[in-house]
Length: 313
Image 1: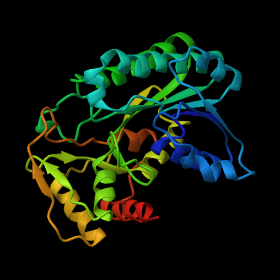
Image 2: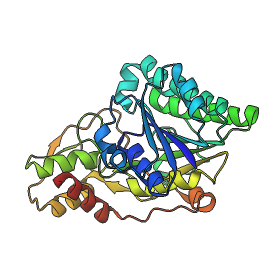
Image 3: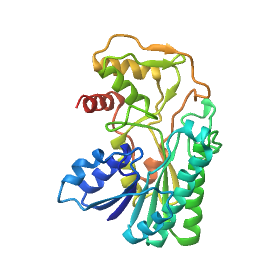
Image 4: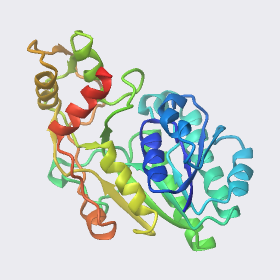
């Protein structure tokens, strides 16, 4: 398979690139390196047996359409994005430029280049808005009522993909990702709480829990998520599939598990709850189990140990 991965130098994207190359596929990466790092692709680029080409480009640039068309991938994995919900609130036009217009460029390039399919990284934590706790874990049939520009953009891209499927027979699968964590996640900037805690714990610095720590998230390990992307290359066409564990883990539980694994006995610091933070979140991956043959296999304790080992290295 000839694949193209946008955002392929990022945390999830580079892990996907490694998996595709290990399976013998040819891979093009498009990344503007604003958040992604070439260091994430160092091993992949250093292996002469790999068919890998890296293109530094911004998906907002109309030239990306021609670039993708020239590379003529069979499958496009679209992960490039503005990923900070807070930035989307402060700069909604910028968020839309990257996450909507940039995505249209990618989809159009895929169409012109004769791609068979686009696999899109959507957001299970935002497209469903603020579900009632009684609706957890959330299924794909839940109304999509996002309450942030970021969530709106992610929902809209799936609408574009559906339209392209109807107009041009360009297949797609949208993966609504839960809270992805794992090696290579940057603990600085807009990062997941697992990476933030790992960095602080190993530096001997205190971690801060906002609010009472009972807020929950659905933490899914990056290797499991990458497996869903690979499976979606040939399955689940025309579908939105949740990629999560259906399990809720509170921030308090997460800290206790990570502190124990890091050998830290000090309790976390406490701070006021952050305005607008979702109280509870989890996704039902039943559709992915049926249509992708996918389910998560990495438990949180194992995943946390892998993250800490990576940070130590």
